[in-house]
Length: 267
Ligand SMILES: [Mn+2]
Image (cartoon, rainbow, N blue to C red; front, side, top):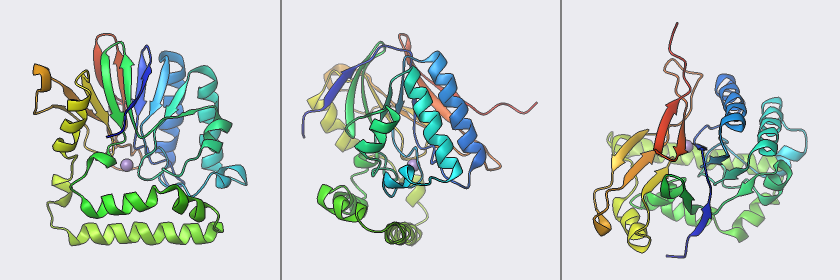
């Protein structure tokens, strides 16, 4: 395994992932824009841990005639980035967000796995899809999609071609999931052996934080390398446009990590 990049940040730090911003979820988008404002007032830094956008075909889309929701999202992100540093980790849906866009928004692009040295301890953070190593089909596809040469070719295709290819891939992955047994979604999770290997190499890790599985939870890690108990925080996905709204963020502060819901209880 390659050496992990480590960065030191003092808090409070806010973390969100799997917002899936897009044209058809206005309430989710608005909740995220409000959250950016809240973070800029309350946090010292914001970490966006993947799948902030539901799809991303290339930064040129954002630069030339972005749709209104995207225009709003870019303004909200740039505005927040002027007040506090924003760190961005790619998700499996928005891994094509490029250095160009990040530079224009004033946000910092992080590698897919990082060690954060925080007031609460050392945190291993990633989007989480790269930890789902028992999904062999996805891991094969991921290897292809994350290849810089292939991305270079893709990003130079006309927009309509890119959209077509992305739709085709999404359709394929939906069909593949349907073909799996009914337990697929219930059992879909990260591979603890893959995580153990990382902790063996970096026993200083106190916490693991990731998104991707859309199963908000706090787990004790099974193995206790160096006799240390470690917690794994799984971030929620966001959906404020459905009957059961959900949206949450993680606060990293000197006394630990806490998950906070942004859904207001009914009056
Ligand atoms: Mn997601």
